[in-house]
Image (cartoon, rainbow, N blue to C red; front, top):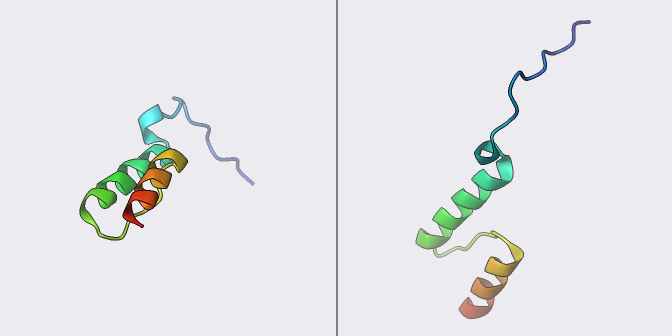
Length: 51
């Protein structure tokens, strides 16, 4: 069987999945009453303040 082609250029930092998820999560947290997890530091502060 054939092998998949390798990428010719490395993936950009901004395209990494974790960055995209963080960006989306922060956007959701600004508008939605239901908060999502971003990072341990951020979520810890937010969750403690809301409870």
